[in-house]
Amino acid sequence: MPERSILSEISGNRVKNGELSIGQRQIIIDMALRGAKRQYIADLAGCSRSAVTRTLQRWNQHSTTSLQRSGRPKIASPHAERILYRSVQKNLKVTYKELAQSAAAYMTTQRTPSRTFLYYLLKRRGLIKVRSPRKTLLEPIHARKRRVFAHKYRYWQWHRRPVRFSDECSVKQASGGEREWSFTGVFGKFDKPCITEVVPKGKQLSQMVWGSI
Image (tube, rainbow, N blue to C red):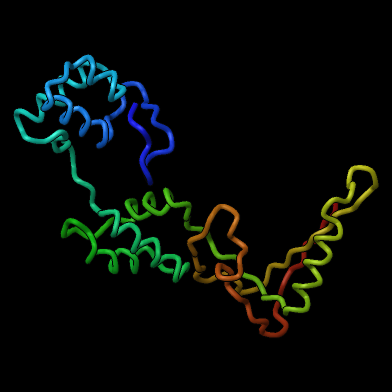
């Protein structure tokens, strides 16, 4: 195997029936032009003799070591994918419609990207669309107190003492309406940029539900 160069792959091991790297193809062409035997080239490049034969055939017939692949070309280039990812990071609550309109200028085709394409593109980078929680934002002093409490009882032995957990929920009149959605990671739903702030509007007709375990 050739010596690993700077910024190349850490492992020189090649997966069985995998694609040859650019360095391996260059070694095959260079050694063939020098008159080396194919078995020697295969041992030097770390591939099979048939792979060397096919690489040389493509070079002799098409003057290239890799032909254009069949199938539909990619809608977005790597540069366009990075632009879309940065756009979402700047505004986590951007809609798919707004994102598709802004991304149309960077596509390799004239078609506007579909919602499905944007969904899978961002999902590969760890971003999914979730419903924004509607919460009343805490004051900094209250947030600090909750953090201190969480750190204090982080390693508390809950299973050794009887503990009662309680929670409550209230359903208010006219609390529906259009909900906001935001892009975030798997555990980022309750991050501050993803929360929809709810401003109290005084007393309203509501029903309180309370429970404990």
